[in-house]
Image 1 (cartoon, one colour):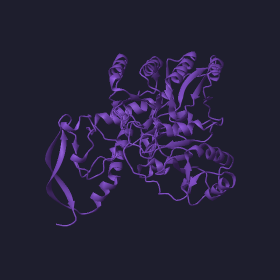
Image 2: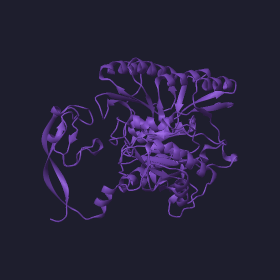
Image 3: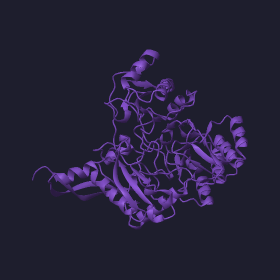
Image 4: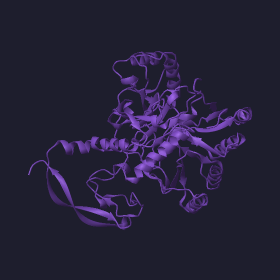
Length: 496
């Protein structure tokens, strides 16, 4: 990144943009002399601003009432509110959590948070659940949310690094109220007991809460593929996901996206925490228009899944080049990293499975690339929600780095519960025939005993009992494209 430049962060509540607002942001970016913009991990929009154009850009943003801040390493930061609105209706979700539920909550925030707030549906796996300081997770009670509080400086011995669950469910419209109150305590008192927080809220706020509730069910799952044009989970409309590996999105391209959205009645565009964006509710009749737009810009919509879940610092060419090198080496050996997520650098609050940090040497050695090495850490149980990271390797050379990460990926797959059970218990096997239904077009198989949990189809659901509009999960072919067949299956027997 060039010297003598500022970075402006446009704060997009919940990662939700209207096409008109997106166009205003590109206009501001062009005023600053940019031909592209980038996205941040908190669903914000970032671009560089030269010293000469800073006042011009600031006036423009203020005149259009666009929320922003100048990125700084020392100043108290305003934090963007993260939500899983982007995943709603695209991937499976909690039944009562719809687009309106997010918007109603976000509209009630009439202050600018200084701590990180997440408002997330636990069923979806696109948006990290616990990367905020205040994490509101949808419950089984309509319009009520679990609250998990995370602080790295809690003095509560019962809670690892201050992560604990609030003893009551919080009503949707009161999320902003309790958030503002807790922020005042947390920012002024870095160390606190959870019991102190609960009592302070009880003494000062009259909230509509629920005390008796089922605990949050946290089901491990792989993150979804979020690129390309696909059928939405909750309707016959389509969604389109756009990912550019360098996180530099052409303003010309975005302007065309916004224009087509306005032309076809798209109300909102959504940003992901993985520095990409989605357009939802594309009507089938308009698909050709979107395909033509994608073709016009020659956009690659087939990136491999193992390069899409990375968290890199903004405008860091060294980190981007390192990622490209690792991904290229992965591709050479067809390594599988599906389910793992990666960060390069030391994020303030990491939310990925694997951290890659550069070891720093005294300046006298900086000229010699031979001394560049890396530290590798991974989340406990490979689950970043634990907020605990374990050291894997402390001194890895640039050349050795891909190989070490490949070994770590093997450790991950060996750690999965199903594999643990198979490896640690002596088993006997025998062969049996199982009836399945196979898609003639892509050869995907529907297995009744497994079902499709990601689409709310329970294990044991026979093919004949599937909904009439069921389609292939991979290629979206209708039910009549499936043929019944028998396959051999080896299963674990308790005894023979």
